[in-house]
Length: 317
Image (cartoon, rainbow, N blue to C red; front, side, top):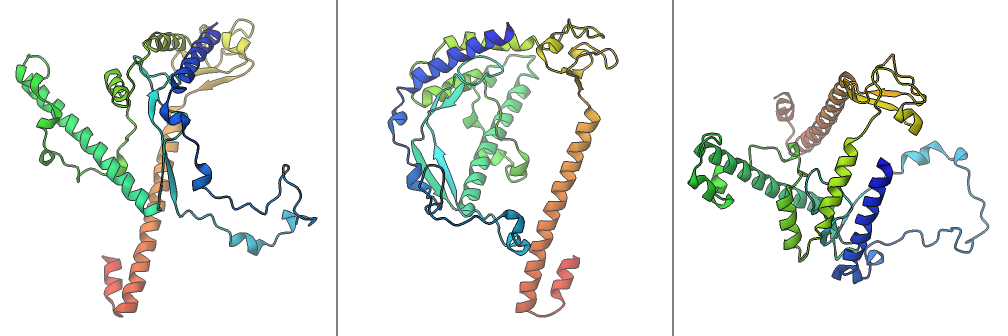
């Protein structure tokens, strides 16, 4: 019953998404993928085209090992497709309605070199970081005026983001790569973005359907307590494993008492933490290796221009 209710709600959202998107001005634009991306397989053969020749394909088992070492995947450009913003009908926010989505077809295309795209991303991330720091500074000022929210202050209600200057922000002291930019947006912010994108009428029915989906998702796991009877356990009858993220949630069975035929999964925080630390150490080693390679190249260039012990001193320092 839970799956069927969520499926009906999802079908309703998808149907309205198609109705709203059918009136999109960008949906009438012709896709221009062929104008940007060129195919290198003009002379290739497939099941739809006539055979190019009667050449017998060479077995990969007989290929020389030396030929494999020279093949590399190289990237020299980034193609960015831009889409107009639309009401989503395809995602489930944690609260409220007015989900964000995009049109089915892109309305603009732009190409970057790898360097240009990296600079564009850094500039965009710094702008988002600046806005985030400005909001934090504004909230801190309001909390100070209201004594952590215990006292009402009319001056605090009048403060806006414009009252926080760029001089008050320490953007340079924060590493852009250490920030997470895909932060969830509150309902009011999502509605403002939709209206700014030209969405005059926001479908209010989505809010109720999203609420029904969220409520249905709260009912998860089996109702067993310590012991799972394969014939009575909801997870076992559905053919899925019992899952325990913490004590008795979402499934209430114990490790020894679970007799689910599909099995049982238990969250192991120690294993997750160990995997996290190993990943961080691996990334740190790769970063040091890249820095060491760059330092070696700089030393070689400096030695060629100015022979002497200066390179050795800089490396030691």
